[in-house]
Every structure is written in C-alpha cells, then in structure tokens.
Image: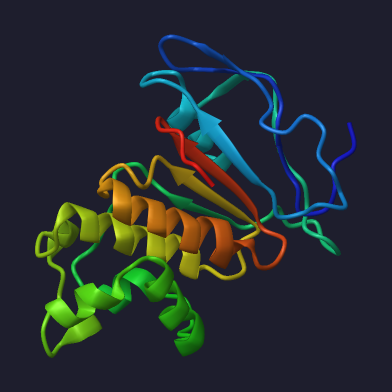
Length: 209
C-alpha cells in the first residue's frame, strides 16, 4: 500500500482492550488526488469507535497488539502529521472561554471568530454578559452548560489550524439535534473542509450531509 504525504491510515488492528477489537481500515484505498476527505466511523455503543480514534491519536492507554497505525509524514519532512482530537467527554480548564479555545496557540483573530461562528458560540457570548469570551468558565467548565462545554471543546479542536488530521469522537452527542446538525454542517463539513486536512467523525447516529 502506498502512503501519501500527510495521509493517515489505520490498518486492521487488534487493540488491547476488553474485548479485543478487530477494526478495518477506514479508507483502504486512499485517493491522492482527493485530500481532505471526511470519513464516518459508525457503530453501536461498545463497538470500538473511541478505541480506534484513541489509537490513531496515539493515546498511551491503547496498545496495538497486532497491525499498525500509520501516520505518514507531512510533505517535505519526517514529522508525523499534527492530530487534533475532540474527545467524547469534553475537558476544560479553569480559565476564560477564549483561553480554552486558543489553548496556548498564537491568537488569530480571524480564525478565532470563524471557529466561534462555526461552533454556534456567538449567541452564547452574548448570553454570558459583558465579559463575553473573557468569562471564567470554572474548573472543568462548571459555569457552562453541557452543550456549551462540548462546543468550546469542538472550537479548540478546530482552532488548531496546522492540524492535518481532525478526530471527532461522538463530539456532538451532548448537543440537541438541531444545534448538532448545524455544527456538523458549518464546522465539520464546511469550515474544516478548506485545505487538505483529513476528518474522521465517530458517531452512533447517522447524520444526513
């Protein structure tokens, strides 16, 4: 199999979790002329979606017993592609909403504004009062609703603009169906489609694109 620059390939795997899982390659025949694909990883609860995405992200708690996860080097270098993950359970730290989105990256006002729009956070900023995105969210985002926490975590994932692979581990589950559909369309289908980043979206629900 040929690995193209910046490509992510998961070959058939057996992972060290109980029960062990045999997982097929999400894209066994990648097309070098069609970079930036959106691949859905679907299945019932316990089928291994989160485990597969964690293995791709290089999570230390997942051991690959057989098979390989291959992250091809980005074009022009030997460095594996940068991977950005929106986990199933969003994590936030005690700081401002902006801090949680930017997360130590250089501040790009244009991309930041576009990410907030794509994650449906504009209205939330108005509701948070005059402090807006300078509002302290509290430890683990205790000052926010579950849906707001999920969308802030999605915004952080998308804000990492140099990522070549974006992983979404059932990241829309905490959103109501209408907000989730809008975020899926605006963020995952359109905003992150610009460029050549690969997008893997794990979900229990079938989403109509």
